[in-house]
Image 1 (spheres, rainbow, N blue to C red):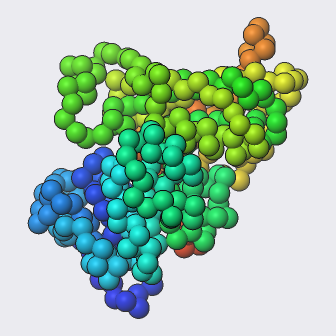
Image 2 (cartoon, rainbow, N blue to C red; image 1 turned 135 degrees about the horizontal axis):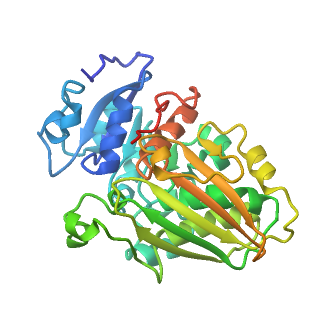
Length: 355
């Protein structure tokens, strides 16, 4: 059973999860419960307070004896060394000031602290930011870029699912000034779990099955986050056309990225292989091999293929990840491992579920 026995002097890190009633929260619980350095001590939900986790999430039967409690900053700071927010956007910012005043570290899987431009965040999310003074100290938690800063972070903003795939695909090219930055294109498709667990007509099985469609074509909330990361990598402002789609699958993201190289004679395959050679969760596939979503299902891996298109003088980069893991909960646990100087792959050594 969870709830490993833990005392204040234990070597285990005491962890709490706020808002574990969605798919990302479910995956986060699954990962934390089997992590050898973690003791799960608090799981909160206002709506489900008093309900046993194993009743709410049947896959946790026999694994956990905790029940949901109503979120309380006092309880969290007393019982936790580290708190994860697996809440919708515009929730964590209302509790963050109180948590940051205490000796607690936070990993926030929502978008509340991802954007450094506060007016931009307010424009995209439609409300005033409740804790703007903490935005600047938040560390953006993409390990392949920010590993050194993650190690010392007290407040970590976990990247979004689409932004992870798009940034990893463009990074080697932008870091080396190899492509034109005024016309980048990202054509990304996500499984329906990326739309959340709320009841919506558009997410019904009969609406999603045997169907494929674009959404938020005129502008998606992840666009400014992606452009922020790409601009930082390039050292100059980039312009991105980002079109997300819904796939008739439960989980997985496939992003196809397009850009125009300044020189088509560059060995792009070698460039990508060298950039990610020491990254435990980024796999650059051999030339001519293209990634499939099922090859990363249930894992924290991201698989990438790079393909020059000689006829048009363009470059295509194909990226797949599990939106609930490398795109959310898995990446958060990867960041936790870095923060506590554990082996980065600890608790994340999964092989993809096939078929």
